[in-house]
Image (cartoon, rainbow, N blue to C red):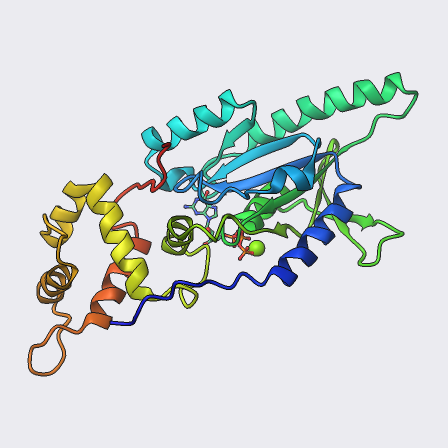
Length: 284
Ligand SMILES: Nc1nc2c(ncn2[C@@H]2O[C@H](COP(=O)(O)OP(=O)(O)OP(=O)(O)O)[C@@H](O)[C@H]2O)c(=O)[nH]1
Ligand SMILES: [Mg+2]
């Protein structure tokens, strides 16, 4: 198996550029939707987002709620709520986004009240979506915009012209989401993100991610690991791989277990939801 890759390069220059672009865009927006993944509501959170969006009202939009272990995820969402966040879980595949739209209108109502007091006109809410890779930003935009979406024109005076999509008479959305990075320097966070494909598999090696997935399943969902692979002890990962390889026929010529095939089996099973609804984060 491959040796551990311990140092991850997060391209700080690229990150700084993205942040600069987002802070430019922020001048034009009223409300930020910060998108996080319900299966990793802590790990997929952008760490230094508060500096970036400062006092803009923000809603934590928790996507993939249909895929998470709701009991565990709700504990973390309650904790966010206690800290004063607006939190809206969504299932973008089957559910609706009415709760998110209603909350947006409510927040914008307050903004418009204070605009009126200053003698300014009421206006529609301008929303910017930010979040880590693969958390569902584009799906959210498409879901909000629906079929009746139409670009409402570019904002002048900006180097890259921005397109706004009108969601309804009261809400407009910036059509390109801002992609930001969570706390990748933390190996645990990086591996959780890799497990749910929020960072590319080639950044961390596949065996490391699979070991991590097996370990997390063992810690949090041991009965499911037992059910699928008949594994009850993970003290020796080589044995774990042997078991899975034999059980699933991942053998090379001569009947020797093919470790690479086993890693692919684990990853595919995990991605296909074979272990059921899962949440990998826990409050400390
Ligand atoms: N089951 C389920 N899948 C979702 C949900 N939201 C998004 N997805 C899936 O998650 C994957 C990533 O969604 P995208 O919308 O492309 O994510 P993104 O944040 O735009 O990703 P990048 O553009 O790569 O940063 C897609 O396969 C979506 O179908 C959800 O609420 N439930
Ligand atoms: Mg996208």
